[in-house]
Image (tube, rainbow, N blue to C red; front, side, top):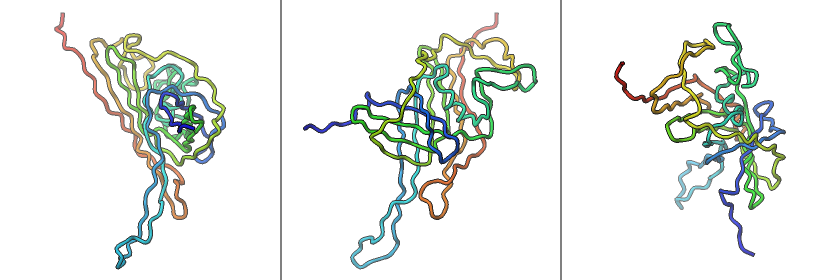
Length: 249
């Protein structure tokens, strides 16, 4: 019997929202993606004794953690939980939020907050019936790229607690099947912070790239080889916008 190897074209990602950092999600939804690099890393512990035979006598596995990127073409609704996790928002995109001037509720949007949203992410290789389940995950960074003649792409940087392997795939709800955003079907608008009305669309923009980072890192304690929590820092949003130079009329 020939050996079967996993083919990347036969893989599937699914995501579920956890109730807290340590409890695995019970409901999963298919997540469209282009590439991903999710993996578990183990640190190495070695002894410091010097022996006449020159060989180390202590070599052990240390702390475990999860990390990697998920890259995808953005689309309506499909990535709401990942973006909510990146924003650490206490309100989801369907609920929206009240604008800073109190004028109206902004729907299909979320606002930067201080509430971590933890996720379980399953990477299932259908051809070999093998699943890797990453738990205690959150979005540490989110990058978005807009440019002419391309889909709107995003890369989500994931930090997590642990990984397990199983031959039993989770029950996964199909994705909504929405089409990805392109650079022709929307507008870039600029307005005052917290005001719902963003004004007229900006023109002559040739590209826009920005990255949100949260500074998540595992919190390790004595007696455990996986994180007891994830620490986070100050949110930082940086990016670059290019535009053509046009003579005034």
